[in-house]
Image 1: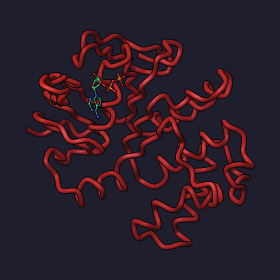
Image 2 (image 1 turned 45 degrees about the vertical axis):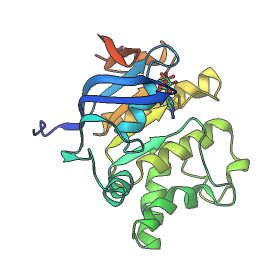
Image 3 (image 1 turned 90 degrees about the vertical axis):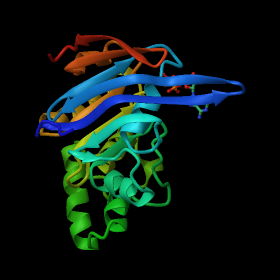
Length: 234
Ligand code: ADP
């Protein structure tokens, strides 16, 4: 199977179940989803619907039982740990609810660390990192440590880290969870700008107001896509 050139993420008939004692719980059941460059898809649904499982599979963080996963046209189903790690570093930016910023590194170092781990030289990584921080509206925080930044600024640093360099798939799990509503809106605006600039995004959210930033909203229940509607940007 091949995917359209603009398709950044493609899940085809993906299923994943967990064993719970004697029974198997279907966390995802035959889910298919394509997300193109420039497109933001919001994923909503009740607790236990499979939202996090979907995002983690899309990000190459969780294995799945059947189906296909393509990121930027590359098949990742059954890929080796090394191939998955490379795809995560090169193609996939993941914003976790817990930001996972390293407290002993400056904002810039937090953004450049994954680039340097991937072999980018220090000077080039710093250039890319400063650009990424400027892109999220933080041109002046390079040397500050996470505890010297506001919650909204820390979230922006995490987004800058997720999208620094050429990565084109942005996966965000409740990225505004810990933020007040005004700061949350600012963060979504930054996400949207990055997607308008050519990335593809999947946003897991409980908040229907956040879906206003999406092109499409996918509703999950019991591991299945039960509805797809236009988002506020469609
Ligand atoms: P959501 O993010 O929508 O709350 P999840 O993807 O976390 O849903 O979970 C979907 C289903 O899979 C739930 O029934 C959950 O209990 C189950 N599940 C998720 N992760 C695991 C795991 N590591 N072990 C066992 N069951 C799991």
